[in-house]
Image (cartoon, rainbow, N blue to C red; front, top):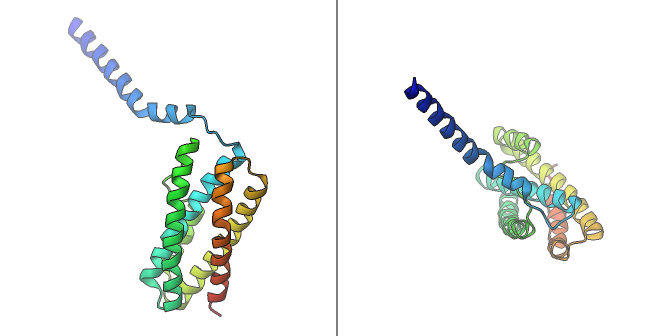
Length: 177
């Protein structure tokens, strides 16, 4: 009888330790306090998700597009957004903002459509998505530039906004007819 109790107690202790190991990072992440306001946190998280998606789509364009101008544009986007993503990741860490490593479900769905398409259809869908993403990002960056309070975040936004505008204009120029 005592052996069963010892085994049962040991199992309960092991289970409790395992639960602490599994759930402690989640609890600690929730307890971290960001130095940004909720609007700024949302901006950082959405910008990171969008930037990650643009890089993934640009990398896909490099593999799938037959248009040399689209390939060159995609390489530029991959480089520029990759650098911006790294800068944003460092800023998020400094400001205590957790970032997801998962692609936004809507953007993932778009990515899967791109993977399944070929040729002209691929190029048209891709450039359309680049135009849409950049228009959304430009709007979000302009709002953050005006409404944001954190000086580091405002500096990041103001530094990248002209490049986003240029990317958006170039994407519109490349839109297949």
